[in-house]
Length: 351
Image 1 (cartoon, rainbow, N blue to C red):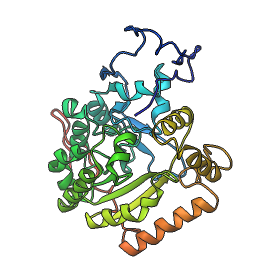
Image 2 (tube, helix red, strand yellow):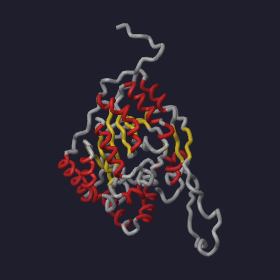
Image 3 (cartoon, one colour):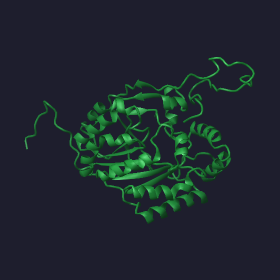
Image 4 (cartoon, helix red, strand yellow):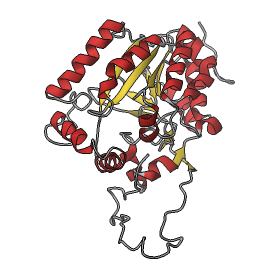
């Protein structure tokens, strides 16, 4: 997805590849080109599973992230800057140097058993995709779902992967008890745009088929048209929502393109490489919706932007959802059933 592997913001030295003009004049050597990109996975020995947030504009206060980094390689991913905390690049490192948390299910179970734990819906897929390709081998997300099922703990999942269908055997019974819902991210219906914007994510039609399969299994499923990028995919809003409704989605949401920290440069670089004739127009519209900047982190506005163009996007989205019956149908998750399962050796209750 990313064009480069720019150094993270915490590193004392910044490295960039430049063309000195000699490549066409002399025979290149092995040192001239970067090595082929290969995915590596390191085990993350974190001691906690639940991540908490107090953001007033996010509809959940806790989440679990089975992985750091994401193979899908979406250029716009707002989680890219987190790789800088690891001394890695938010660019190509983010999509190729991954960390997996195999102990996450066990740690989650321990945290849910704590005496003072207060149950609220838990989110999966809020940072990186819990069903990215390495999940086929590591099955950490499945382990987390098994724990949540055993505790009758409500969960909401966001993904752009068809791999979620593997876990219908867990999710369908949970959904029947009001404990699970899902959301599929569908950014564009154009395969060519998706190929360069989300290079290792399933094709758009496969994601829509996944929406249908989940819905038919009784799992309330939303579609997220996120991010909406002005002059790149905003013209598809109505088409995306019509396709979502036709495939059984019960609800829809959107997020305006967000470009915090290193993503500003990564996205600009990618845009100029993939859509050179549109790059200036796209960035000008982004600035128009962000108070003259490429990003504004103000709570409440960071997801939707400000100004006439942002208001037009919001109105188009709202009108289309009203017409298609996709507004205010979000499934309620039941927190009243939460109960830690008994373990061998536990003292039985007297009454």
